[in-house]
Amino acid sequence: MTRENQIEARVSEYAESLGFYCYKLKGTGKRGKFDRIFIYGMFCCLVEFKKPREGRLSIHQIIKLNEYEKQGTPAQIISSFELGCLFFDKMKALFDNTN
Image 1 (cartoon, one colour):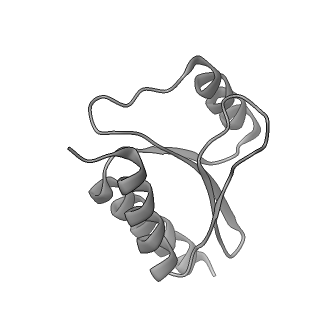
Image 2: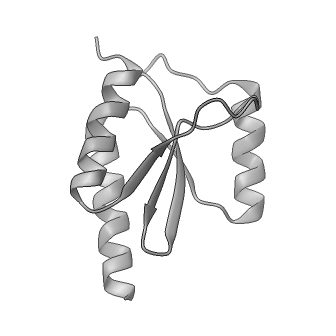
């Protein structure tokens, strides 16, 4: 079975290969924080990684996700390597075509 940290490592490496900057968010002391922030040009997105089928957001993460959406801050939940690659491929294409 694929573990969350395996998905996180593989997707982060893939995103970096596309030119995204990737930073692990740790030690913030805030409940509900997402795992990583990815930056590509002017685009910034918070990402929470979860195990396929079993991974669930905590109530604090759900609250944070709603807050991010209200602010217009992009946030994504990724539960597989394939979904992560698809997301970052689309984001890169979108922002490469707007610049």
